Length: 222
Image (cartoon, rainbow, N blue to C red; front, side, top):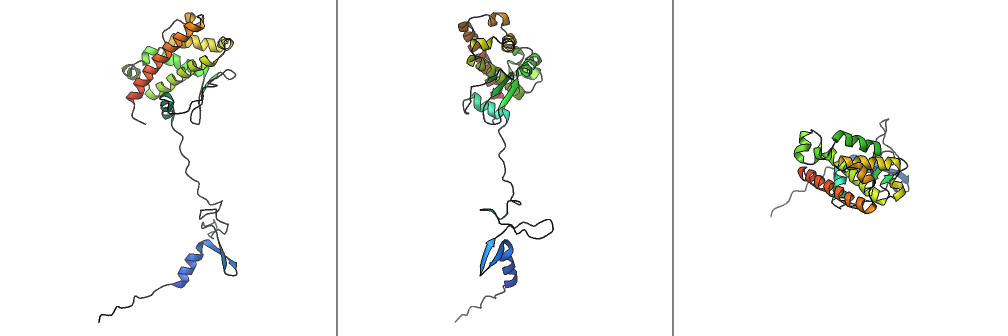
């Protein structure tokens, strides 16, 4: 008959007790409470109460990782292809003369002056109407997309303004600069009727959309 040798029992009960007490504090009457496991600057173990579902107190709790907000390109891509909620009103802030795109936070903001500077930099829409021309101009494609999105947003914002608001100097000035940048005569567009402007605006948006799609397609998938 084969006998089985008993397994050796080698338990350090003192060490096991210390390990078990590492995150507990004696309350008396055989009761214990959980405490923070962190070490203080003096080298002693913290005795503060631990937070719910955590081994640490409020002082030593490790911060939860914060999700990085999507980049500008990703947010524009989602807006452009209708995969993000876009709050249209207000896009144009006539008090601060800015264009604000309320998408996934934080919002995108551009002043009228900055948009004017961008148009002066690119000079004419034809200079960035194809990928070849964008590369020849040695400009960043993503920067072109951001610029085009603000132009598109300004046009969309004009649709939400009253007739009197569109006649404000800063608004009409930027509108004239924009249509000239797009290859139209600024004076004719400023003094056209509402129905005529609606047709011009639709054509401008169509041209912008075509270029944006070209640039999107040339970029790596996000």
